[in-house]
Each structure stands twice: as structure tokens, then as C-alpha cells.
Length: 169
Image 1 (tube, rainbow, N blue to C red):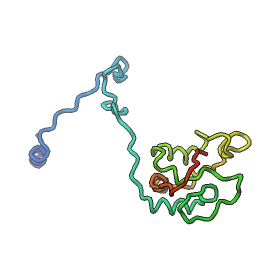
Image 2 (image 1 turned 45 degrees about the horizontal axis):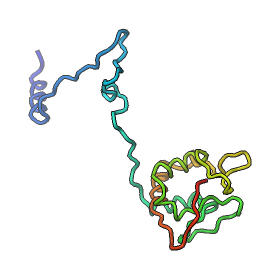
Image 3 (image 1 turned 180 degrees about the vertical axis):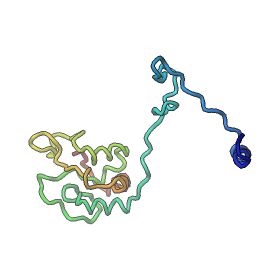
Image 4 (image 1 turned 90 degrees about the vertical axis):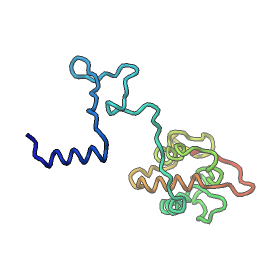
């Protein structure tokens, strides 16, 4: 017999939450392996839900501008219309960024920062002699929040009148 308070808690939970149906168990194949046949719900087995897509957080463009300055991205990237120090070395310059905001999806910017060698615009001086990207990795020094905000800043950039050439590092 259950203590009286257990029944009271269950009664209150049922009133507040409604009746709780027992959780259906995923059918298992021999050996206890879950059924992953076509049509089986992968989310029911703690897999990726059907139709799931990664949703990148909004970020804060003003904080992202500060991240751009903190990591001295201006040392290699010009941003027309912004007041950052001029890039240091002519041969070390990455693409001018003011025109990039409307040209690329969020995941393009994310990949550009966390995996700069994924796509390199060849023939524009963005690659090192070994063919890798000249852009360094910030994966060990940049926080996820800084990346989110930096991407928000890059996405918010608008080209000033007359801005032209664009490319990828």
C-alpha cells in the first residue's frame, strides 16, 4: 500500500498536467538493438528529429564589433566605413568585409571563422605557400558567445556606396 501523500501528489499532478500515458517503448530487434528501419522515429531513440535544422542564435552586432577589434581581425581584413587600424601587411590582407553581410548565410561566416581553410578564394593572396588559409584559427581562444556576436556583426555589415571586390580567405 502506498503512503497517502503519494496518492495526493499523483492526484495533484494529474489535475495540473493531465493524465500521463505510459511511454511507448521502441520495438527492439534481437539482441536489444532499437529498430532503425525506414519509417522508425529517430527522435524516439534519441536520434536527430526528422526535419531538424540547426538554429544559430541571434547574437549582438555591437558586441561582435568589439570581438572583431579584440581579436584584431582588422590586421588582415579591411571593413570599409568602419574606423579600424589599417591592415598591417599588403600580402597578408584577407577579403574586405563590408560587402559580405548580405552575400552569405550565417553558416558560411561560422565556417569561415572556425574552419578558415574549408573554402579559400584562390589567386587573391588569401592562401599560404602550402595552400592553406592565411587566416589563423581562433578555436582555442574565442568563446562560443564571441563567435555568435562576431557573426552577428559580420551579417550586419552593409557596403558603403561604391564598395566592390569581395572574396573568401
